[in-house]
Length: 322
Image (cartoon, rainbow, N blue to C red; front, top):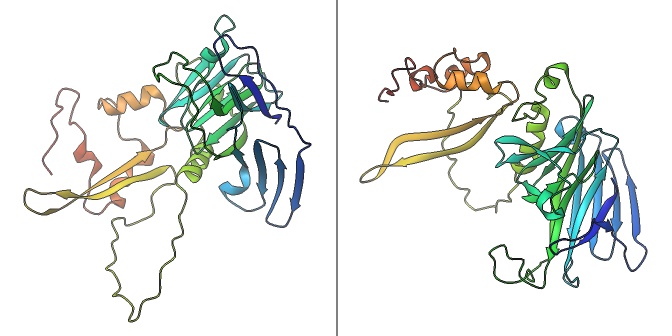
């Protein structure tokens, strides 16, 4: 990981240059039984890289946080660059709203800013042996300006309009903290067979890392009341834990015409590493049976049958009434 790089923020700008701080950076190294971290303090950015020594998702990736403040810059962008020996050949991957991964290709004939793409959740580069995935907790712009490199824009300050619809410069910058997780994986033979397809799929570990970063558990303090409040009634909609590749998106009460309806709606999202694109389309169209990992989900939900929510045949697309 090279660290921050700075580049001019204007059309036709040159290649980014390494960030140079006015004063030498302060480096702090911490080692312990549970985690080790390196903190580097520059003039405009504070970067902390932590490696946890714990079981589970926490211990399988690097945790990176960058505190950025470029309010005294003029027409500059601050980016974070990762340099590796991965032979990516100018190809990198970014997600589309966290649901689909799109391959991108660096084109030299385009200006620098035209080679950056939105990165809502993750971006990665890969070759036949390895894949390096950068997970983000906030939507940013990413690119790969050279083979084996991955750049992500941390902040941008512009004094004039860039003719992109805003109508003014970008001068409302704030002191902002960006959080990432860097995951290095060895590719399997099955994953190599997906090369050349118009879409790509993260691994199950990559999905778990992204959910751990973007849907983390929040600890909320509760004030002690006297007398204590009555114990709320328990609600157990599942007869067994959900599979690890299922994410609970929403659980809410439906609104009736007069009052709240006794019906509930439950939204689940299944990660996509185990289903190919062709298999998923065949399942939606009713041309293939329910995948094995979903077949037991109807037994987990009390009184719910997933088969009742699917068309009886490709020609019959009517859904039965609940």
